[in-house]
Length: 124
Image (cartoon, rainbow, N blue to C red; front, side):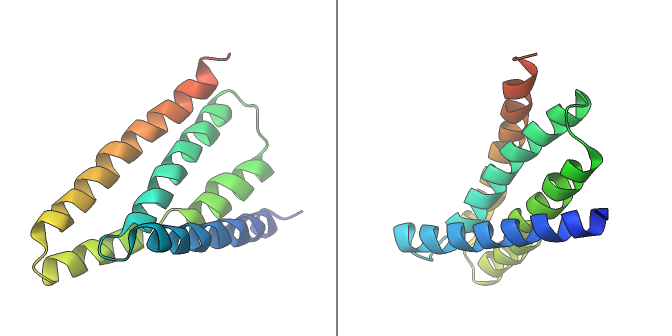
């Protein structure tokens, strides 16, 4: 199967999961802070760490990399949405929330990529 098809299939799954998580987080915490975007960025970063580690170990095929690493993760993680929401917080005068959004996304997501890699690499 063509890699474009794998990317499309992964993208469909990632988009549905992203939407579901975003709705769930709004129901759980409300919409005054972009917790849904934070949640998908954290989850996506962790999963990207796992995919990256498996890729380093050559345990996954190019098709699976296209399905998960490009399609699923590309649709799941939302840095473009993150950027827009941060700008909206700044434009709305919510500078503390904007800073918190940037700091939490950056620090936690970097940590989650590392933890995802370690989860896989520690088992080899």
